[in-house]
Image (tube, rainbow, N blue to C red; front, side):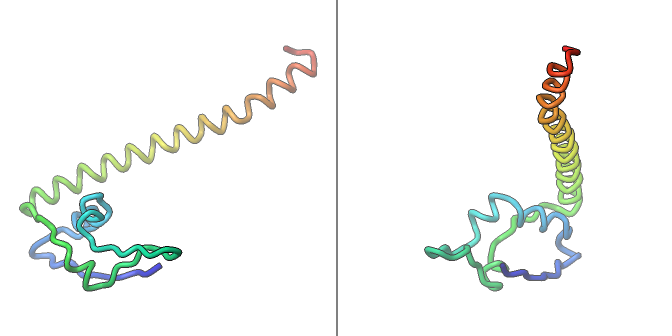
Length: 105
């Protein structure tokens, strides 16, 4: 429910590297996220900023980001392809029923 805006020190880190890290299971394991019954998990700004990031060199960060973007694009394309196939399968029974009841099957 909360949104925070952080500025990445460009001398030390790639913004996309930090963004990918903050989406990772490693970040979620390290982040002190509080969960209380009946409420959404919460984390305060200072707690977000306190999570340690093991920064590789800038060239390594760029390499990781490029690999992550490529994998994400591949996953997005696969998801779109599978969704299209699923939609086609959903329409198949209706098409078969029309064929059967019109005497063309």
